[in-house]
Length: 109
Image 1 (cartoon, rainbow, N blue to C red):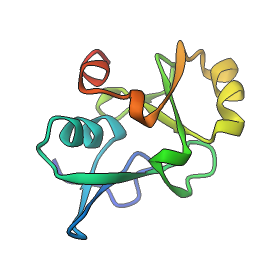
Image 2 (cartoon, rainbow, N blue to C red):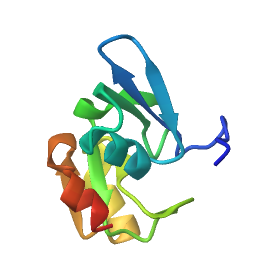
Image 3 (tube, rainbow, N blue to C red):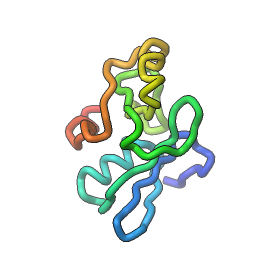
Image 4 (cartoon, rainbow, N blue to C red):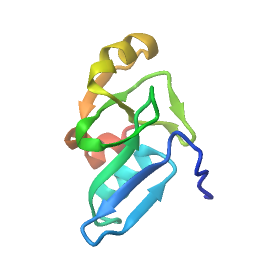
């Protein structure tokens, strides 16, 4: 799949060796990381509301919302200060931290 550099869904994983891998969605990036296909040490996401790039450890992720990415249901990166607003506006079923996005959680989306 060709990546759209202007996509608000684009996500990056960063490896200890300095290699950056780009993905079309947070779910795709996290599945590659969690499954060991990409040797990442961290990931960067575009925050839903302001589209700024942020380290995943500083964000929360909305699951089960009415916001659908280009590959279907996804983990939507949201600033923790805006998580309650996102839940209200987009009917998210839950908000999780990056470390809670395990391979099994991601595969269930």
